[in-house]
Image (cartoon, rainbow, N blue to C red; front, side):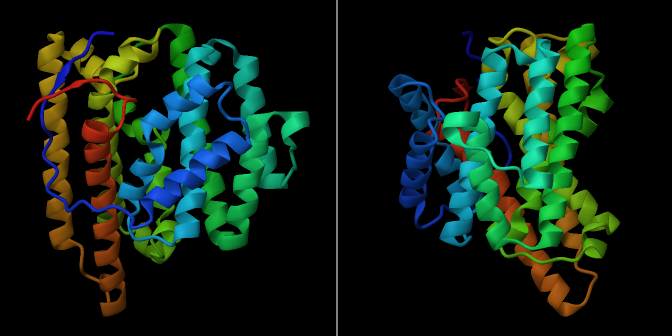
Length: 322
């Protein structure tokens, strides 16, 4: 694997970590073993070295322990599924891809039960996660989450069609859909649960707030494309779905130029986010207070991703430039 130098990114948000992060990590590792989500001990050690729970503990440092454990299990499962799909080259096996989507939606929409020995680790683990989440969340949030999963699968279907057809993604189209490929929309949507942030749909849909949310998602997606570049290029076909490569192809520039152009886009998005935070407090007092909490939570997510990717995980090998 060729390691690429990645510039230090502008991310002036305060970092934090959940005070019970070690317990969260122990919980999720035990859950992985309980549901046999890694085929052998070596694979478990590899997943443990990625330190997904630490990523969650940095992204949601102020949530209730139980809620963070539940969400950590789910995000860890998504990471594991992503690796399984890539290693099995599932995007070239449409039947397998559609079967997994169907199984997941049956669990979420029809509460279908799956057992470990009969149905396998992935769907059994998903059933366990969803059972716990429905005990701790509102029907309105569950509906929002299910829609978020549907959007994620539509994004993956878009990627699937492009990969099968050998079509290179267009820059504008890629930027609009990238947040769903990496599920960053789920990380912001979950803040009612993981951060006890309650804003009505009318607030979330306000142009300023909607733009703030989407900008934070773009920031995390762009930084992820930089840190995951070496990993993506080591996998057949996956490298095309990285902003660095999209820009390299669009402008016919070198890899180094594309990396720096991507970093510039990231930093410009951060400045745009900060500018939005200065103009967003236009509502009543309680709503503005909740928005302040929301902005802080988004900051933790953006900063947490940078800190985890550059210092604490082996998932994204790269050369970090200070």
